[in-house]
Image (tube, rainbow, N blue to C red; front, side):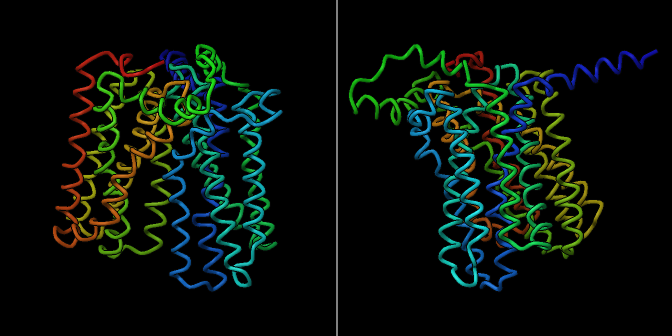
Length: 435
C-alpha cells in the first residue's frame, strides 16, 4: 500500500539530478577532474617507476600551486574573447572548446616526455598541464554556475562533484591499465578522452543565457583603464561593497580551517596508530569514497528540502563534529571498526558540506564576474588551512598529541559556524548576493 508513495518520493528526490543543468554539471565535473589526476598520483607513479629521486618526485607537488592562484588570471577568462570562435558560439563556449583541446594536447605532451632522458621536459609539461588545467577549471566553474538556475545549485553542485571524483579516478585508473600494456605515452593519450565530456556539456547547455542578460545591462568600456577596472577591480569591489560583504569573506576564510587541518594530518595519525597500507587503502580510499558519494547525494536532497542557508549550517556542524571522531580514533588506538566509523562519518559530512558550501559560493557570485569571483572565493576557502597545516600542524601534533590536536581542530571550526549563524540572523540571503 505504501510502495507507490515511496516510489513517488524516490522519483521526486532523484528528478532534480536528472535535469539538463545538473547533467551538464556532471559532464563538466568529469572533464575538470582529469587534468588534476594526470599530475597527481598518476605522475607520481610514473616518476617512481622510472627511478626518479623521491625529493624530485615530491617537488612536482608545487605544480598544484597554480590551482591556488588561478584567481590571478581569472579576469581574463571573464572578459577576453577568443577571436572568431566567440562570435560564432559565444564567449564561454569558445573558451571551453579551446581549453579542452589545449589540455588534451598538454597531457599527451606530458605522456610523451621521458623522465629518464629529459626530466626538465617533464617539468615543463607538468607545469603546462597544471596551468591549463587550472584555467580549464576557471571556465568550467563559471560555465556551470551560469548554466544552473538558483534552484538547481544544490543538485548541480552535487553532480559536479560526482563528475570530478569519477573523472579523476577514472582517468587515473585508465592510465595505469593502459600503461601496463602499452606504455606511458599511450596511457596519457588514452586518458585525454576524459576531457571530451566538456564539449558535450557545451553542446547540450548552450551559451549561458543568464550571463548574457547580466552583461547586456553594462555600458561598453571605452578606454583601457575602464576595461582594466571592470576586469580586475570591479569583481572585488562588487563583493566587499555588499552589506556584510567583509563578514562573508571572513566566514569563507575561516569555515574550513579546522576541517582542512584535520584532513591533511590523517595519514600521520594512521601511521602513528600502526595501520597497514592495505587497511588505509580499504578504509580511507575505498570506504571513504563510498561515504563521500553517499554524502553528496544526501547533500543534494538536503539542499532541496531545507534550502541553502540551513543546509550550509547543518553541514558546518557535521564537519566540525566529524573532527571529534578522529579524536576518538586516536584515543581508541588501532581499531578497524573505529577507523571505518571515523572515516565514514568524516567523508559523509564532507560530501554534504561540499554540496552545500559549493552551492553557496556559486550563488554568491555576480554573473558579470562569475569566473573571477568563484576562483577568488574557492581559493580563499582553502588557503588559510593549507598554510597553517604546512607551517605549524606538525609542531601542534607533537606539542598536544593527536587527541588534543583533533579537539583543537573542532574548536577552530566554531568561529565559522558562529559567523554563518550571525549572517543567517542578520538578513535574508538575497541581500548577500548581487544577482
